[in-house]
Amino acid sequence: MYKKLVYGLDGLFPLTNGNRVPYINFDNAATTPPFSSVLYGINHFSPYYSSVHRGTGYKSIISSHLYDEARNIVLDFVKADPKHHIAVFVKNTTEAINKLSYRLRDEIKDGIVLSTYMEHHSNDLPWRYKYNIDYVKVDVKGRLSLDHLEYLLKKYQGKVRLVALTGASNVTGYINPIHKIAELAHRYGSKILVDGAQLVPHHPVDIKPVEDPAHIDYIAFSAHKMYAPFGTGVLIAPKDTFKTGFSDHIGGGTVDLVTIDEVIWASPPEKEEAGTPNLFGVVALIESINTLKKLGMEKVAEYERRLTRYTLEKMKTIPNIILYDDGDVENKVSIISFNIDGLYHGTVATALSLEGGIGVRNGCFCAQPYVQKLLHISKEDIEKYKENRDMLRPGTVRISYGLYNDFKEVNIMIELLKEIGSKIEYYDSKYRNPPFYSK
Image 1 (cartoon, rainbow, N blue to C red):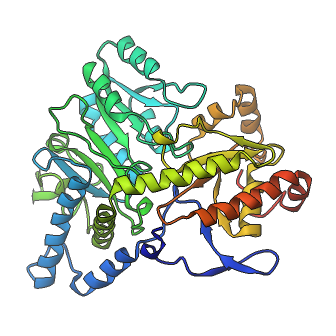
Image 2 (image 1 turned 30 degrees about the horizontal axis):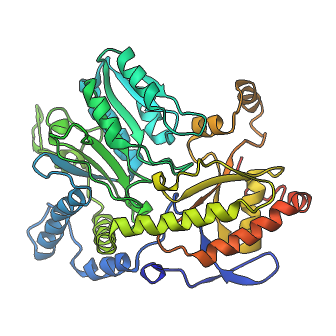
């Protein structure tokens, strides 16, 4: 439906039988190809590229103006209030969450951070080694347990300072009810961070006005997952978060005055962005946002839901298929995890690539505790993996759509999966030990 908007989809790539076919990318949760508008925007701006906030030349003025105006475009995309919020440009969602984990140290101190069993490691590990942390459980279907969340909020009697959770799982695609959770967190005196890496590119996001009890305090997301792969991410936060103290990265651009004896820091967001900024990355991001806004995020979400619903119905016809999905397509983004019973997940992913030119991801997707829950991996099994690092690790195969994928591509994958599922021994023998097996 939207293929003409995306660059690089017309190449042919080799299969093991010597044929060359169009590449089918079903690994968009990891990274997306660029919009053509993004590449055009980069090329169009290139003649004006210069230093930001560091020169009086005409090009520097243009570059600085674009960089500053980009913050308002980003804030508007998620309905943030520029009077209350700021957008800090970073490399990706991981850096954004790490930055926030450092900057909240005075606010959280000896308080509690609640993460969840659903999280990407990037929204677990940054909190794990700095604060007292506890985890919200998931139910038997892999959905976040709101009952357990409220139990923990009550248990800690106002000591929970932050609930850090994903907007949408990068394993199952399940969308968390972030506004319901925000209202609950605020009721017990906590703030909320949403890891928006999987949510923002696929679903409308409104963080709501600060006077609304359901508002989102912090949100982070990455440009490379929304058709702008030039190394930029965003942290949106209240200005007061950065009013005192200083960044975890300091240097050029972060100061107002420096003497041998003292430092006066610049105002946020400048004091959070040390060094020369990634201007091209910001250009790419705002071009992507402009394209997505023209398309309409509701329309994008609905199209991807149609793809997902169609795929799940077709996958039920695949022999030996195991689906990790509760069937609620309305409350998930376009991510599907599955296995073929009797085949290692790496075997299935490799066969899809070499037999059909289909790119998927397999493994645990940097969300090992969640995958362990979904697959019912015992503590005894984990001990075995710790003792023998060469053991093949459990995991799943993940399909993740972008707005440019279509039903024809889905049908090609379904037919190949039917063959793989009906010829377990053949594919196990053929692709048991490829050189890029994911452990």
